[in-house]
Image 1: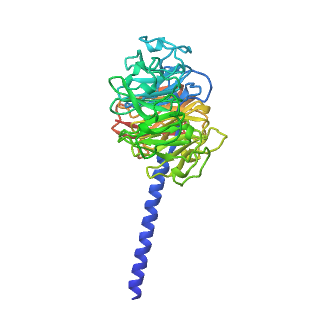
Image 2: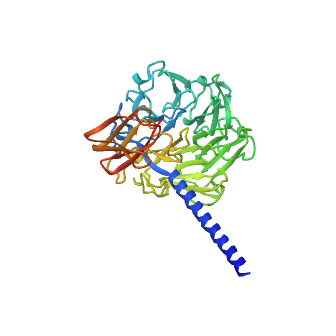
Image 3: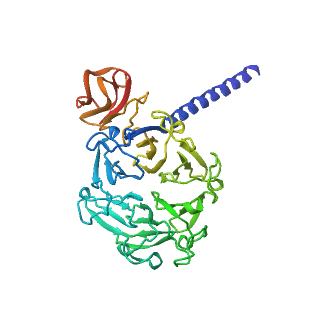
Length: 459
């Protein structure tokens, strides 16, 4: 009997150790999946760097960002639209820096731009900008500016109509798109969301109850048709991968969702501004002034508020994934868990094709990445002591790898996963290119100045 008891005890202990072992692995993977880093911006309030590495460029006060299917990032600052390609290079693709209405039909880089209240990029690579004139225009994937919606004489109460005939007297506060090439427009003070079809016809998609000039802003309609609901001061919208629409109903201190069957509901907020702790149902929480929103492929909703990024899980609970939920922002944490990082007035959010989340960290003049899938997407840029920015691109690569740093590069070595040194050389430069064509496919590590280790993949 004793022997039997001992065997059971030993089996129980073994199971406990196995459970702890796998729990540690899962925890480490989870922490790795939420590492934060900088992908663009040197932290200064000065515009600079076109044609070079985004990591050492100046991107003053970026607010609106978007990503495309190829992994490029788009941002708006200084009345210009800038593009960060997947190899980490930043260029201006629209705007000459002058604050003035865009010229329809002109080459986008030769035209002024009139501010930005919202931005979206569709699956074809066309960029949509809502500006300060209550209009939205399109920058085509061939680089031309084209009229899109607004400036006509037809009010929202007379939809459907041609999008170019629509009139948004209350301004446009949000833009988004779905994978059927429909574009969604949030008319902020007119309290409706319009859907523009690929044929250019706009119709009411949410809001507009009573269909008149007065009485259609407010709060009503949850559980019913979105077109019969009331919204109030809507300023951000986004559409998920299956076509559900999410609305920051700012005047009602709520986030609302319109399912693909047209039914609207509240998914966060109780109608009172404020802060609520993590771990409670989002529908029981107070939420603050939201500046950006994005949805991942699993249906989790992310939004920026109070110098933090918060998440509404697909089970309906509220969590913080980055920042400190305070009125005092800062810059800290690159290379570590996002949950202990500091942000400063975070704005727009956007997911890339890999599931990584990008945030416009406005007050820090940077674009930062929360790496849910760190081996895919824009390169991570950080150094342990945060004294310089470092860029390695393209990554993955099949022939040459470029290394750029804001500090002088004095030495570089490349090792494989076994620790064997395959390349070593001394330099005195800020930009180095190394031919890695002879290396077999696999994972390698670059050591810079004998202290910074960065990973790259050879295709």
